[in-house]
Image 1 (tube, rainbow over the protein chains, first blue to last red):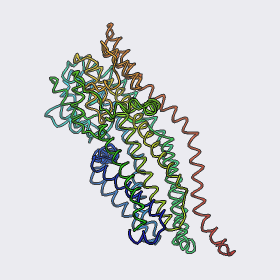
Image 2: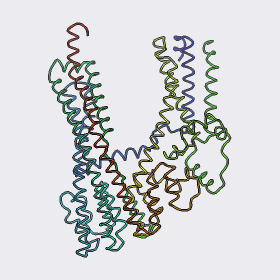
Image 3: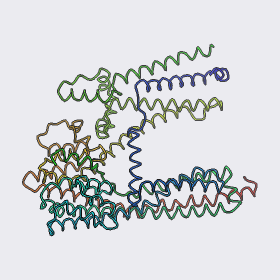
Image 4: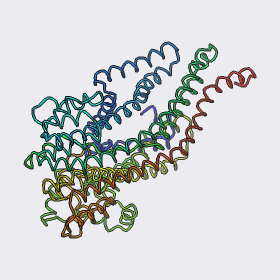
Amino acid sequence: MTALVLAAPLPIVLVVGVIVVLASACAACAAILDLDLRWRLPRRDRRVALLEREKDIAAGLGWPWPRWVALRLSFIGLGLVVAWLTGVALLWVIGPIAGAVGFRFALAGRAAGRRLRMERSFLGQLRNLRDRMALSNQSLDTALQELGRNAGPDLGYVLAPLARGGSTLANVVEMGVRARSPIVEQAAAVLIWARSRSSDFLIQTIDTVLLPVGEAQLAIQEESMVTLAQQRAVTFAMATLIGAMLATALSIDSLRAYYQSLAGQVVLTVVVLLFAALVVLLGMIVRPQSWTRWNLRRLAEEQERLGG
Amino acid sequence: MADLLQVVPFALVALLAVAIWALGLSRLDVFTPDDVRAWRRLVALRGYATRAGRMERVAARVPLLRRLQEELDLHRQLAIAGWSETPSGFLLRAFFLSLLSMAVFLSLLAVGLIVNRDWPLPPAVALLVAALTFALQVSWLRSRARARQQLSERALGDMMMLVAIMTDGRGLQVEDAVRILSRCVDHPALQAIVDARGWQRLVHQPHHTTIELYRRIGAEYGIPLFGVVADAAANANVGMSERETYTRVARAVYQNRLADSRFQAARAKTLVTVPVAMMLIPLLLLIGAPIFATISGGLGLG
């Protein structure tokens, strides 16, 4: 500070001095008043939401969580390997990011498609449930157990808890939690609230509430899927084209030398930023419907609190 | 030394300004802990509300501040966004952050001044930065309020199927069913309105029935679905089956969403051409930049 005072003329010292005092005082006030300048959503919630989205995709693909994490880490590593092989410094940053984001993006469509197939099968199983109760006079618990045992390939993992006896309420909750699908979650919520009524009430509920509303929900999901497919097709085509162009350019010595220079790195950064901005823009134009997610455990607690 | 002495009055003025500012903030209870706020709310509900602080009353009387609060619709926006600050508190915090951003920007300019012996940008730009910071905070509040409105409306629509079961099968009132279900949604937007009388922040008029209350909540919080539920409740009150009534609302909600999805998909087919066409730019840049650099180098331009 003393050197600054000696080197700089008075107006500079004045401006800097006043600014430093202002800034320091502001910071002190913020500290004394315990002012929270961070994003209002608690950090833990943000982290959990991010993790939940990852788990949704893994569940949509029918993969165990550890496999999903291992594959994501592998693709990040692959990005680093590509950077090492090409010798382009910027790829040390872009490579892992592309590996992390690209892998998720590449499989998100497949996960959504698989989830839709599972939801369709689930509505079919609801019809089975209704028939078992209405025509075969089975109780809800028995009918659910039977469904769990003959779930079929798309629903094997989701309906597995129903087959294992014990508390029906806990099994239905577990089914909803495993599915990570709005349609299954809502159906599970309805079963939680309706299961202690008579069989006739349940059959009526499935006929007049669950099936028609479920069909309407499925139609929305299908429409969202079409929209999502459009977005993904365009992004894939452009990413492939850019990737192929970059690979071609880096395989030619003179062009690789250019991209290893500072000017080349700047161009590469601009290209990546432009591409990312356009993908974001595409996502904003084509946005699928989102759904309310239920905390089924809490719902079961509330139901039990009101007397099962 | 004499130079430094000349700085002292400026520094003292700055310190004084900041001290007054801090005093104002503390007197306005801007950063009062939530527990204290909860107690005060309880006191207000019991009819033992204490008078607003002197500073707050003064702030409420200043025409400029009052007009600004009205123009920005701060009271409503803060309630919908679920922020517990008062409008005056929000304004003061926004001013505080604007001032801070101006100070940071000015210090950056000062660094430029020291290095180049000239202002890199006119110092007046710092005022623009402060104005931008203020506008961003207001815009953030509005976007947060809009997001919470959408979340609440979506949650209310998604719970109609369950409301049908709970009212018909368990004999619960629609208000109780909505309140219980709002606690089981993965976000607190709707719960903040319907549970623990959260609606009292905006709905002050007396009401006798849930139907009246829901109509008022719908109007005040800008969530039209509350009005639809109120109409359904009115139908159920005159003898229609509750299950049928609320299931019909649920189906109407999903039909509207389906129509929205179809409209968006159709619109996207046209709009998507814009980013697709613009994707050619990075592609051309990738190929064109080294070629241009080579040609310009060959011509001795680079």
